[in-house]
Structure formats: C-alpha cells, structure tokens
Image (tube, rainbow, N blue to C red; front, side, top):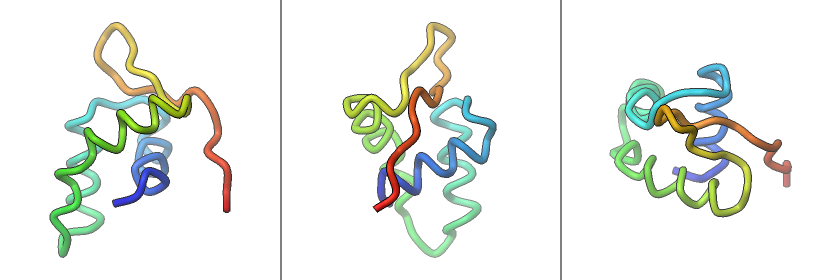
Length: 69
C-alpha cells in the first residue's frame, strides 16, 4: 500500500486518527490484500517527509497536502 493510499485513508477519517483506525479502514477497503499491515511503516515515511505528524495524544494528523503526480 502506497504512502498516498494511507494519506487518503487518513484524510477520509477527518485528518486525525490512530494507526489502528487507519489499519481497520485499510482492511475494510482492501480486504483482498494484507497491505493493511504496512500502515505503521507508511505513516512513519509520511512523517519523515513532513505530510503527517503524531500528536501528544497518539493520533496521526495531516500537516501538509501530499502532491499529486
């Protein structure tokens, strides 16, 4: 699952969600794939690139728009 897909799921959840909530939605949306297991890895890459951050309450929050390619 791409970083863009994870970003879009987080956006769909209102721009603020736990990793578990994002994984759950990924599993619902893409049941034929086990890619929901990569959510944490993709969130960390998004954080490194400055698109999301983890707040002090443990929620992932969108901080910048991810560019369309």
